[in-house]
Each structure stands twice: as C-alpha cells, then as structure tokens.
Length: 577
Image (cartoon, rainbow, N blue to C red; front, side, top):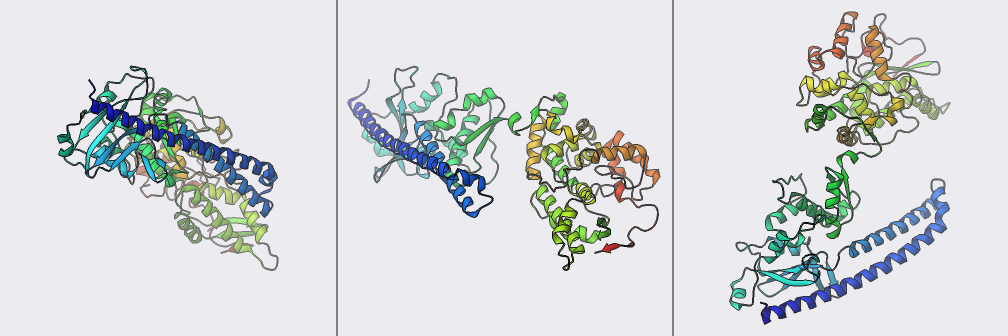
C-alpha cells in the first residue's frame, strides 16, 4: 500500500517531469522552426547558385558561390537531423536523480534539458551523471540518495507514464528520516520485463561495472567479453552512444560503425542508439563492409576459416610491402631519339623518399612523380622550354609505366587481392610472416581473374574483410589518366607475362614481373627452380632461394644479369644522369 508520503513524492516527481517535457517541447518547436528556415534559405541559395555548382572549377567567384550553396545545405540537413533526434527521445526523458549531502539534486536522463538558467535534466553521458551510475555504499561519490523512476511499459501496464520510483540510500541521514524508501525495484523491473521484438536500452539501470566499460578511455582497443545473455551487446551500443557524445567533434566526420553477424541481429538492435539520442551510426554485416563488389563465390569451409584468422592481417601487410620493390638496375627510356639513363642510385633515393608516405598508394604516386621529374630534368633545355613536353612524354612512356608497375604499382584493394590470391609466389612470400603453415598458404590460391574482367569478379564473404583491410593499407585513391596501370593490364598483363616466361625458360628481359623469382645469376640452369616454385611448396622454395630479405622480387627476370656487352656503358645518343 502506498503511504501518504510516497504518494506526495510520486506526485512531485510527475510535476517535475511535466516541467521537463514542457521545456523539451519548447526546444523541439524551436528546432523545427530553425530547420524550416534553414531549408528555405538552402533552397533559395541552390536555385540562385545552381550554375555556380557546374562552373566552380572554371571561375573563382563561382567556386565561392558553390561553397556557400553547400554550406546552406549542410546547415539545413544538420538542423533536420537535430529535429529527428529530439523527436526520437519519446516521453520518458528522465531516468532519476542523485542528491548530495547538501541536498543538491542532479536529474539524469536521455538528453540535457535547459530551462532559462536551470539545468532540468543532465545527459546521461555527461560527467555530472557519473555518480548516478558509479556510486556504491563503499564509494558513494558524495551522494546521499539515488532515485530511479519507474515507468509503465505499455504491455503489462496500460500506460507508459511514471508509476513508481526506487531509492538507494548511501547516507544515514536519509535512513533516519524513514520516508518510505523502495529498494532496487528499477533493476528488478528491467530484468523481469517481457521480451520484445527489439533490444531495449538499459541506460536507466546501468550498473557500476557496465558504466566503467561504457566510459573507458578510447586511446586503445576495448574488448567486451562474457557469456551469452550477460549484456555485452547492449553495453557496447551504449559505449558507442557515449563516444559520440564525449568525442562529438572528432567523430562528426567519421562516425561509428557497428558490425553485426546477420541482418536479423542488426534489426534487433537498431532501436537502441536512436533511443539514446544518436542517429549517426552505420550498421552493416561483415559481407557489406566493402561496398561496390559482387558476392557469389563460395570458399571451402577450411579456406574461409583461414581467411578469418587474425594472422591474415600480417599476411596482407607483407603482401602490400612486397609490391614495393627496390630498383636494382638503371632505368633507360627514350625521349625522341635520345636515350635517357636514370641511375640505380638515384632511383633508390627516390624509392627511400617514397617509403616515408603513410600508405602504399601515396608512396606510389610520390615515386612516380619523382621518376618523371628526374627524367624531365635530364632532358630539359631552357632554349626550347620543353619541360611540359618532357613531363607528358615520360608520363605516357610505356617503358616508364612498366618500370613503375613492376616496382611500385598503384593498386586498388580488388587488384591487390586478385593478384595475391592468383600468384603462388606472392602468397608464399607474404605467408612467411604469418602464422599459417605452407599448406594453409597454398590453399588460399585460386586462378587469377584478368584485369578486363575485374569489375565483374565474384568475391566470397570471407574475402570482404580482406578487401577492407587492404583498402586501409593501400590508402585508396583514384588513378588519374596518366597513371601507370591504365594500359598495362590488357594484353601485356604482368602475371600473364610472368607465366609465359616461366613456361619458355627465357632469361631475357621480356617484361616478366611480379613473383618470378630466379637465382642471382639468372642462368638457364635456374629456370627449373622457378617452375618448382609455382608448382611445389612455395614457402620452402623461397627459403631455398635465399629470399629472407624484406624486399621480395629483387631477383626477377628483367633484372637478371644479361648475357652480352655491359649494359651500363652509355651508348651513342644516350643521356646519363
């Protein structure tokens, strides 16, 4: 039976909630008006500046006007997102409050609600809300009482309005007052609530141990583990909401990605974050981590299991590093009738400088630009002012492009994985740094798809995390019209050339490249070893060939010691740098 004191307190809580709801409704109306005004301004700006969006690359004034159009549009979209967030809060805004020894009350809820100079409600993620979740009898954090508000669920009760409250007391003064305290009813109500079609937020009843996980520092990875039904998922989701609040500026552009095992699982949890005031979260399954590719290939279960191991990250990192091959010979190209030689020492200096870049493709672009600039500088004549012509000539030179393709190609994630899985030699080299056995590395091999068909290739679900990791390692980035890979992957494909050289046993520089390993002298007696490398145990063969150095591929056909005159001696019409 409810005592008079309890009834009075319950009515006082309801009156306070009405005040919170009135202030929240006022904020929501103001947000809607702001969104409508900004939308009108954006529409007007877009109508006036539509031409500028097309002409911004041609005229400076148009570029400024186009930037303003985008700014108006961004502000309008942000305002409407804010309206959606406020509307998603529902009616049960407050979870409860704490009161300290001085009687100061801090109300905690889904969001902060300010009325004039008074904070009626404090966002649950704010620092001021920590005692509401962390206080214990042994460490009460300066509070005397913690009260949880209990609402109807609309299922077992006919309403969702406030029905009762639950108190936890940490100060003797409150106990002596004898004012109808009610124990851990909030937690018990949450535990015994009926199961629903979607996961619910537990933000009102977060326990101290859970709060420690939610608010843990973000400067290192955090793993939440436990048995089934222990709340791992819901705590992780609340942590995502906390990070979006605590580090809003840092995460405003990148956001938070939630990866789930199935679409059914994502559907089950989809309501939690919006109910916590966060809509800037993307939820995907593992198969959707890498957009824009076609699925449909089915790996054998044992191969899919291997691809899912953590050591594959080491293998992929080595595979990317293997595509950065230090030059071991001079580069010779023609500028008109003049033969230009870029010495190996200069090439190595450019190579080392490019290694400073954080991603593979940034380094590839720097190496390409450095090589072209060095060649252009060698033939530049102030009398003819031919620097632009030289740059364009060397940028489009087939010899330069082949050189760059062999030593540091610009790669997409799809190209890199297709190349890796389609070359036993590349797999064997990359596999040496992983925890995989030679047999496990060999099982990853599958026939390589030609470059012309790469857009239509079917990938397996186990490939998607590998593509995602490669995208990070490579650094993405589009290839411009003068880049090196746009003409090499049709008839003169690097791997097709490699296979042709292995089959013919031809030691001459005929364009062989990735993965074609030979002995140092490049003599005909070593060609059988190369054939064994492709057909036998890749890892063992690599060890036998002495390729323990970090740069795989220094011993490849076109860099083998040639038979005949010394190629380093300048010939007629040759420009030596």
